[in-house]
Length: 271
Image (tube, rainbow, N blue to C red; front, top):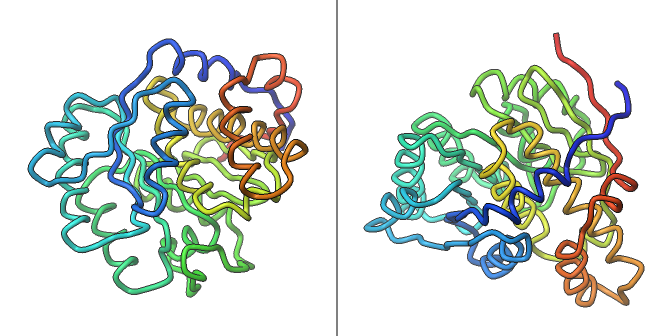
């Protein structure tokens, strides 16, 4: 592995300039925050869930973000319709496997989405991704549990199996398409005290993937910007509530100098 600099600011600038429509079928707990984080970036969030309109809405979007955090069987069927519409148009589909490993239903529906549609970016914490990789692990609700598995190896295997980019969030994020792997080591522990930072990360990835065809670069750049903003927000915050407010503000005013100076990324080629 070697330390590198990626053009995360360049992708952020594309979002600000192109203002992509990011269609969400997402977690009801965090839906406002997901919409707001895309708006902060300069994008246009749409939170359409009705099965009667999701295909049409995906037809005007630049990316689609799916999140199973508050899944129902009917909701997953709407996700399939939206994803198939997005697949036909060739726009990226991001799946946040929120809570995979907590129940059999979540596992089953995650696999259905992966097998019945094409998911371009699979995102989850270590226990969620390990579960999708077939490991005998259980998530603590929607929070990560301690995983002793080789997460890089699991991520690589999933990426190759589904021809997707896999994102594993944690103290060091893993982003891989099976050929190139990035390790993003930004962020702050205060993020773990705010409900929805994982869901918001998926939305940021969705906005970046909407404007950058290199999805490994898009996902890594999204995490760099989101987590650098978190690092800048934390010292100005007295607790989780003010941190969340400051996180939006710091992401909004990110500039190239700050991103280039603070990003902490390592990379390696996979053989």
